[in-house]
Image (tube, rainbow, N blue to C red; front, side, top):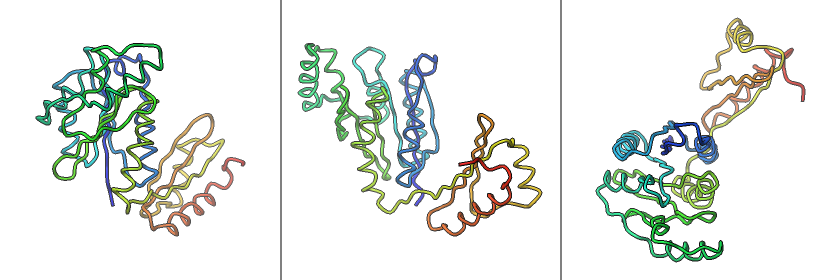
Length: 253
């Protein structure tokens, strides 16, 4: 099973450098843990045509699309409008979310306003995903050809709460047969990437069916081996051979 996903992060503040975008890291890790793959991470501005085209193109490529950001109460929070236009759907008020927002604001000594209720707007076909740590809920929109569009708020704590509490459990049920890729890690020290590659090439080390990744930093290189589920013997053999070839350069435990 090879289910791929794309993330579209929406917000001028992400492109200007004012806000650090951590969604790709968090989503990629969460999906990999249940056997799904984040294949692309795109950041775009708050612009209705750009949002529409980015989501449309992503849905043409993969089964799962995550769009984050632009769900707040201000005039530049236009993600709902862009998606409604793309999917030819109405934007409606979700009354349970309005009730939740009233209580949410009261607990903080504030009164809900008409602008605040904008955060309760969802697409008419959406399944509303509760936001346990913030205001605007997430949305799950099921589309033709088994495509799924998830819409999430931008703040990382809210994004991750909805992801872990609502989306990942649902995906685990939907793709119950998915299995995480096998991963092994070999860490070296005192040797650079180019020297490691020279050693491996000189010995003809090129394990079949194994993806190799090299991640240098602070005098060390982390080598990650990855393989499809069911190839335990193959990846264990590749790891053992790699350790033997680099025996004089392995990081001390």
